[in-house]
Length: 241
Picture 1 (cartoon, rainbow, N blue to C red):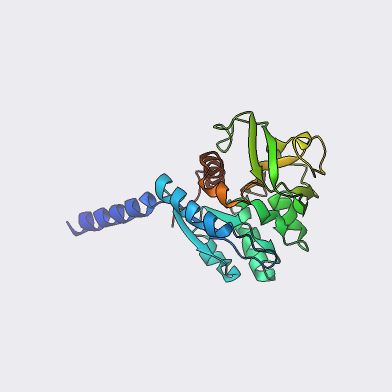
Picture 2: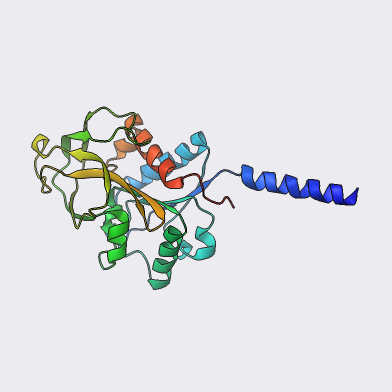
């Protein structure tokens, strides 16, 4: 009887662990330019989590990047992070997280960071170069099979801050490009990526250059785009803690 009770307790504990919702960490440290839309993006991501079955933590403290803490998360979301974010130990923790199958989501200024760390550039997919004034432009959704784009029109017209990029990783799977003929100030030519994903050194990385404006975080099309990227980054094989 005692052994039966012990076994039942173990099974109940295991079921509670595996029934736990996946958890993501939103990181929004800014050592460079601070985007006011971070204040809109944070509650929007919490709301996405509550409505779609995942839990959300958030921090601007890079000390959260240590092995023990990062093991809790199915994905890390870089919300318009800028400048130098990490010391060498924190860099290693992030690399280990990715190498162990972790997911990464980059939003807008996540490419405007860690310019002295080439691994970060390859992982996130590009570095920010500059941008023209905010204006309306036409986006070409070149892959509508991904979870972040399947709901989008082939031509998506919207206003945002349109980044030009440098040192773009050639291994990216591009989801959305921008038509440089539809606005002023583009510098990447006829193939100007705006959202992409790739499997990188064991992990899953999704990035969208959209999300500068406050209005993005109440726009159903953008929010569903972001949710699809988060779902991709979380994957299905993570360990729930």
